[in-house]
Amino acid sequence: MSAEKQALLDEVKEKIDLEEGFIIASYDKLNANVVAGVREALVKAGGDMFIVKKRIFAKAASEKKVEYSLEELEGHVFLAMAKGNFPAVAKEVFKVAKDTKAVKILGGYFEDKKCQASEVEQISKLPSLDEMRAQIIGLLEAPMSQTLATIDALLSSVLHCMENKISKET
Image (cartoon, rainbow, N blue to C red; front, side, top):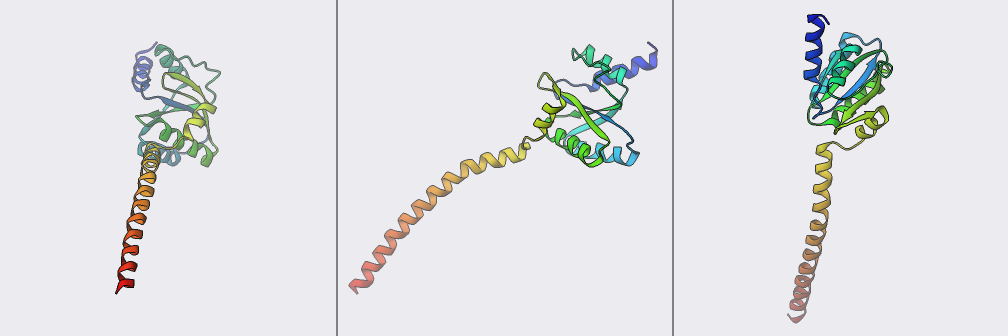
């Protein structure tokens, strides 16, 4: 292997972080503006994107103990790296795939497991971390609000009864 290819292989191996996960997708006829938009959206979601040669990726992945055959990697491929928030990055990749029709999700790697495209799609449909936090807070807050409203109603009804009694006596 030439020094240039070895350097490229080392760079891809460095970028493939199995702790965080990644999504691999094929693309066809994406112009530079679309690629820049995809990269920007992924960075906002907490990820990153880079275009990689299939053979280099397959070799780098196999050295990380994740096997991808060249048959699985059709067309030109790019990696969407999840840096802490895999579902958000997956949402962005599927949004791009839906909007451009030039991107096809091939699979990914999440929580120490190689995923098929359908599994990555299911993960993309999960609520984001902020949405889940809001749901939990709402779940905890609702019973407290109801309890407070009940106590308030009880106390107000006692006060109204006392006011009525006082007004009748006078």
